[in-house]
Length: 253
Image (cartoon, rainbow, N blue to C red):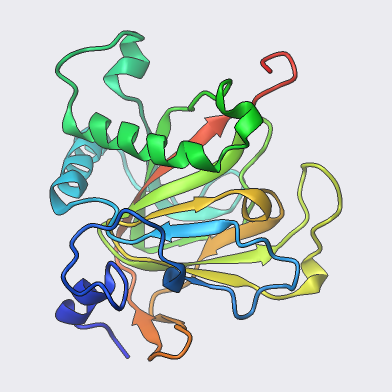
């Protein structure tokens, strides 16, 4: 089924939160683990309705202003993404390295998000963690994001993102990579699906960060909700704000 505007509004913060416009907790209904490998560690979370409409509009306005002269690229050097444009979304504090009383709303939203995401970093690293500047990725309606694992050469324990402009489905699959060992195995099969409505926040940590690839499914793919009607998700132009922590080395720790 396709989600009507009213149904989408009710579903934004979970099937039972009809009157809520903003959610403060991750909702397991938005992570489908029914086809996950048996050793999956439930290390992906989704906060539906994480942003208010005003916060979302503030981010879109700031990104649009910075991307005004950029054209959509046909592809990336690693062939993972196509029909997109991307910028670094540094906050005033990151640019000037000094605090200011007049913090723009988009920067306040980024800081609020980082405060939430810190809880997914290993306790022994929390005091040493630093944030890489956010990236904003504008994916066209006909663009694609194929399966990949974010590099661990510079970024650390989490990959997270705020979804804007349209809904989408992210799929995680077991995958080998450049990191620690050969624990992950593509041949093991299985997958985990994340339903990412606009204004939501997702976070990948643990196995989801290091041992699973992530990709966006094509428009009109179906998200399956245990015990409820399936949701057909139409993906239009999608803007995402990506959060990564910096790699902590033994020297830093």
